[in-house]
Structure formats: structure tokens, C-alpha cells
Image (cartoon, rainbow, N blue to C red; front, side, top):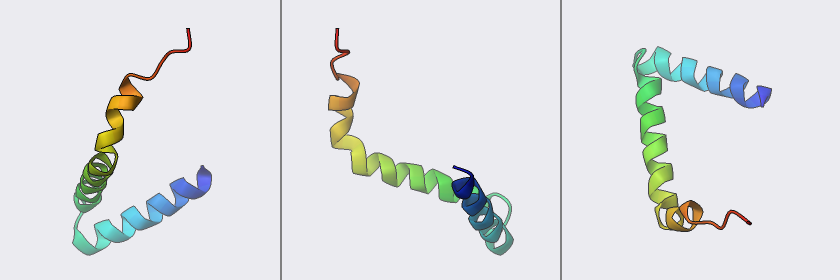
Length: 53
């Protein structure tokens, strides 16, 4: 977990230095959108998974 935080800070700092302070947020927004597109079809089975009761 700490390695991910360290890596994310380094990448976010690099992106902010190259393209401005709001750029890491835009990259995160785009990454979340891509992730949503990739898992869209499986969301129905995740939302309706049996609770095990």
C-alpha cells in the first residue's frame, strides 16, 4: 500500500509539473472512466450478487 502511495505521488507530481496542477485530476478522471468502460458488463452481476443468506 505504501509503495502505491509513493508511486502515485511521484507520477502525480511529474504530471503536475509537466501539464499543470489540475492535470493529475484529469488523468485520474480519465483513468476512472476507462476502468468503468472495461468493467461495465460485469457491474450487473456485482450489484446483484447473493448476500449468502
